[in-house]
Length: 268
DNA sequence: AGGTCGACCTGGCAGC
DNA sequence: TGCTGCCAGGTCGACC
Image (cartoon, rainbow, N blue to C red):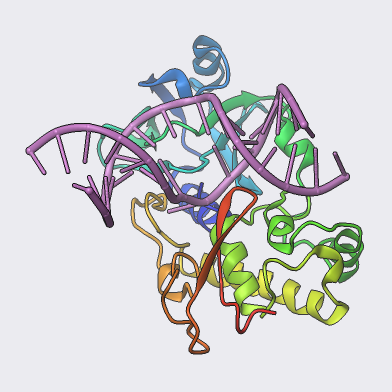
């Protein structure tokens, strides 16, 4: 799925585009994206006003005037696009007030939508770690967590019980900018490096949000446009290409079943 | 506890 | 052209 910066971009687009709008009709084109009964989904959304749009980790929460919450996890290929037209990957179509339309498009149908009363009905939220910009995500927290694990630091960054919202692209970029090898285990990361790591987590994510995220393949914002952080990507998907800092070439390895890209020379 | 793998899905692309 | 295999931003659960 899009990672935190992409989901935050969608959130902001939805906030300016559809908050305070009423959901008049819901067209369920492909019910596989629903995690509840179709009729119940429709019944709880129809006629409701969207009063707030929030994000936690990589999930979006549309708060309704009924006190229900529409939770959307776009996963790998989900898109929320305001306006535009139905396409072959459109799974849901919402008719909103002021003649606005909202499409939920999802090529791989991994995304999940569900209306709940409280977010802790969903396990994801119960186990989710702190937001990276929250004050509880500080050096002491990181040090305590890292000290007790021998898992590679790359895997720890991907673990959403450690920190919410970081995925495969940004974990690679963060470690590159921190000059830390993704192979190092949590307990090998020194105090000084933890400070650097935290600073890079925040800097990289904020920079990516400012650029409306990165678009490797499927991601678009709520306006249907791609993100601009791609231009700032320094290691991800650059296997065999020269490191932007030194002469050696970027290496690809598999960690936690996914590709990790890094520079063996300048990430230690 | 932590790791690995498969499942959930579709489609683009490289190689033959 | 057309086939095969690999790859993809996420998450969960089964299993060792």
